[in-house]
Image 1 (tube, rainbow, N blue to C red):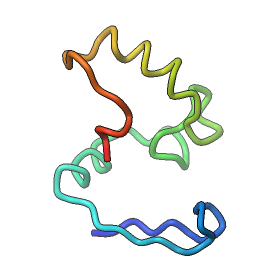
Image 2 (image 1 turned 90 degrees about the vertical axis):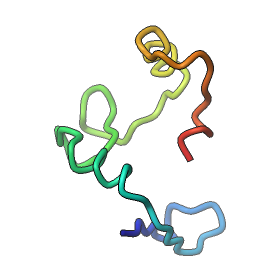
Image 3 (image 1 turned 30 degrees about the horizontal axis):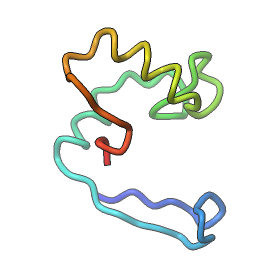
Length: 73
């Protein structure tokens, strides 16, 4: 179970492959696919961007007292 990022989208222009665990696999498998992106934009026609706005909306419903996007790594 790995994810490979092509060199065209990495900061150092090198392909990067990294493993993911069972919980991540379950999230990927159970996330409704509304487009070709796992985390699409609100319109579903592009990749997710705009973390700050989305995190504000999510914080209103998320039971965690404090978290950042780096916690998702």
